[in-house]
Image (cartoon, rainbow, N blue to C red):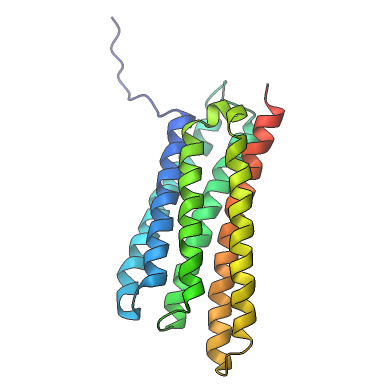
Length: 205
């Protein structure tokens, strides 16, 4: 028997699952950031940045593997699009947490905390979907539910923006609006990710 002298690289399915695990961890951390007191945010944001860094390494590994494999699980452009879409979800959540820290805001309005569990649920669905992404034709319920949750987040953030118009402290309102916009970009990133999965399911044989 010939011994393997170099370790086998993880499969694409394993890499996608690992990145999705980090996306889920990032969503949980962002939820903590949103609910935290200002003095607690620095450590939480640092932890989120570290999660993003590790996830980036796995995304880069997907790209390297694409250059060295003859049989990716689906079209190369779709493998790349899926990896980038996962990465964007985590990037947007990290950027939102960084904006909150930078603005030095105090306790946030309750609507921000209402959006947090929606993001966590989107990340949970993503993690489950990536575990079966090789059989994407069985994931229709995933992208339908992601769309529903994105609509829910949009409604919450629309109400939040309307409430901010009545805030007498304009500078605070603008800072809160910046964080709200970050949350919107994050939820939209999950919807775009679900669209990538849907395209893979519809196009791949």
